[in-house]
Each structure stands twice: as structure tokens, then as C-alpha cells.
Image: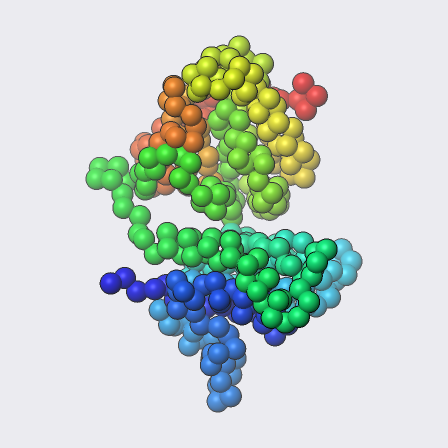
Length: 350
């Protein structure tokens, strides 16, 4: 019988209600180690307690970052998380890897997150105690409301940890083929964004519209952080004025005039993101029949071949890692470079 995943949950003292609610969601499917339950004992220092936890057979760690302190980081006073919580998040990143270390943050709480924690998987939630027209009336209602609000975050964390516990199986003779998905729609947004998060050299978004990325609220921050590290960001989409868009709509069983507005919407959103990325981000369009979608973050790549008469979400997708010279990864990279050089810059007012 497969054991339940073991997850550490940490926070500041002020965030105990959030931890309690998160634990209620995680505990049916995981063995949780909550920081205020016999982790830090009087006979040991805090660092000794953390060292014991890190050395345990953990599968993941969640640190709740709440706006507990005021700090000036050079751009005026801002609400920040406690230093010890940020330290612990960095500690678990080093011990478990960034794919199993999670920062939990309130989506509408003003907490200034440290930029040097690149690659952390930020999981968000909406706190019903803040910004709600009908806040909980008492502690019992508060716990129930928090538990309900944190359920999607807990499910996302459990899903990510379960994937990380399952080692990638490479196909014989194809060392850079890590995983094959029968349908593109089976890949979670966390996995799509995880390809890009923490990239330092190259980010590519190449396809017809890539509206999933254009619509994602996390993408502007991911791209801005990558740009601040000097990462080259290239967006390459199908020209919405290309005559073949009508054929694509027909092939995918969609009303005529469906794909072109989607591409324009993506281009508009990516253009807005480019304003925050400076010279690091370029947007181009290509003319011609689409053949593949490529999402690249440094040496990781998700490749979706374009298959006529099948909608994008139902098309097989392959995860590649650049570990072999002249392998699948390199060949798709060469295709992208050729497509890029033959494309034209997109103007926001085009």
C-alpha cells in the first residue's frame, strides 16, 4: 500500500487559523507536520527543530506568507512576511527542491514577496475574512469559511506533490522525452506555468494563440521576474490576419471567425505584459499553416504537434528535457529558431 505523502506546514503565529484550515483539507490525504504541533520543543533551538524536520522523509512543505511586518526595501514601506517564514521556505527549497516547496499567499492581501525566491510555486487563495461583504461572525464560522476557501489550494498542493513523487520515465532510446500526455487538456495550469517559472535564459511561447498563458493572472509576474534575471522572452503567434484561420476554425469544428479574435486578444495581453519586461520580451507573428506549439523554459519544453480535425485540448503533448545533443529537444529548438527568423514583429496598434 502506498503511504500518504508527508507535508510540513509552517507560518507565523498570526497565521495559525490559516494553517489550521489548510491542515483540515490536507490531512485526509496526507500526513501533516504542523509547526506548532511538537516540531519546536523547549529542549531544542528553532534551527535544531527545523533540521529534524528537514531530515525527516518529507514529500513537501508549505509555508504560509502573511503580511505581518512593515519593511522598507528601497521603494518605500511595504507589508512583508516574517523573516523566519521566508528563511524556512528557502530552507525547504534547498532540501526538497522547488517543485515540492510551496508558498501560500492570499490573493488580495498586500504582502510584498521577495524577488530572490524565484522558482517557488506560489499557491493562492481568497481569505473570506478580508474584502468580503459578509465576513464570518465568529471563530467557528471563520474556521469553516477558511477551510472552504483553502480547499482548491490544498488540492493543488497535493496534486503537485503526487506528481513530484512519481519519477519521470524516459522512453528507451529517447533520453530527452520525459513524459507523453494523450491530451493537452490533461496538463494542469501549475505544470504549464512550472515550465516557465524560474527560467533564466530562454522563455518561448509559440503556437496559434496561447490564450491559456495570456489569460493566466500569474504569467505577468513570472515573465517580469524572468526579465529581471536577464532571460530572453519570445512570443510567436499565428498572424490573426492569415487567410488560413478560417480553415483552422472549420477543421476544429468551430464557427468561422473564432481563432482570429482569440489570437488578437492574446497579442493584446502579451503586449501589455511586454511593457513590464522591457527589451527582454519580443512579440512576433508568423504566416503559414501552424504545425506545432512549443512552450520552453530553459532546458524544459512542452511540445504539441498540430493535428488537423482535433481541437487543441485533445491533442497529444510531449514534455522534453534538453539532455541529448541533436535529440528531440534540439530539433524542435531549431524549428522554432527558423520560424522566428522568418516571422515579423507585432505592433500593438496593428
